Length: 271
Ligand code: DGL
Image 1: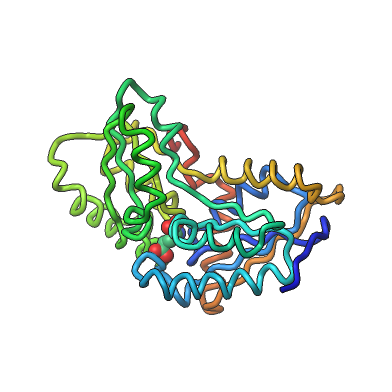
Image 2: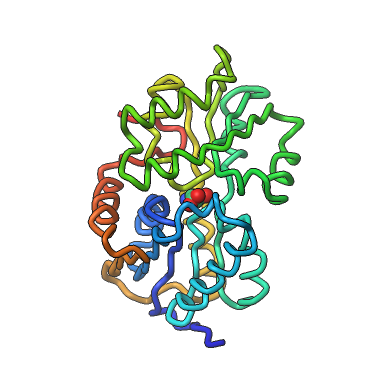
């Protein structure tokens, strides 16, 4: 297995589809001179609806291909992280493999003992990784995990900010009744692209948290400690690729959208 330790090599950013583009944007913001190679596996999305073993094989094959030319891998997908991060780190011990996890910690700061709604895929919420995370904060917050698989499909179809997204959210949130959480954690990288719909349904003031900033920061830290930061002094290229080439126009659109700050950033209400 070839490994690339070349600081000039690109960084791979992998997701099941368009969701990871929000993470890609944050990586670009924090590491502007790095070359970035995005791969969205829209042909196989949603990952959250795939059996664990099949998903692991799929992610491992994408990782092997990407790491044959990239110096680091960002799993810009909570589901892929929950299922494959440990295996990939064992297989590539000298390569930075950065994952995502629901940003529970920053959400704790909204008020004492907050009610935190965690929206994610079923797989993410079922995996031991999330159980351990929720257990860590169980004494400080009331955590309400809620799978929202339909939201992944809506975002993949470019409908994250639509009446259909509002209707879907109303339906899955109905069991909460009038109770409103104090904060929402987006535990799926597709969901920041539905942040406006989430705020329309839950209230425009509700603080929304995602994990992109922390993931990009951890990537920067690991590249630095391993001497893998690019020596380039000019902005690096961003390459958008996908297993479903007909979706590429949507990928480009999402990349442009993130530039105008459609993606919710932690804490800041959207304009
Ligand atoms: N974007 C992914 C995540 O963060 C997965 C969505 C899916 O394909 O189900 O979990």
